[in-house]
Image (tube, rainbow, N blue to C red):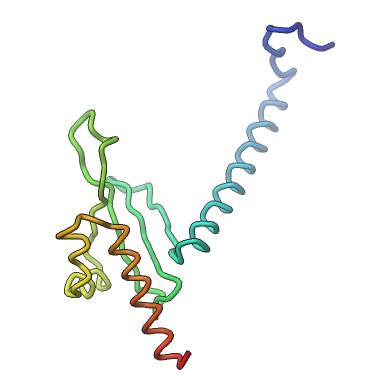
Length: 138
């Protein structure tokens, strides 16, 4: 029997149906997140892992052009006053060996002078690409 127009559909017949639906939704969500992460990687050249079990949330970022697996940056969601959490304009760069190298590079001015994380990260990608291309002989 179809529900009447304007009436909500009847509840699932059993808890088993609800569990099956919940499992399907989780699976679909996991697939969509995987596609999103792969799309970000293909578009930007960055593998980004969110580390949500820390406070604040952190993001581990590794370039496709990195020389070694351990060459990565870590960013943290900044602490904001209560009620202003939605006003974030920049993530905090945390101390890693790669960050220590990059903070000495003139391109770090993109972060300090211009307050532009996207410009800084684009420059990081271009520099790593150039090093890989020159070293590789391409």
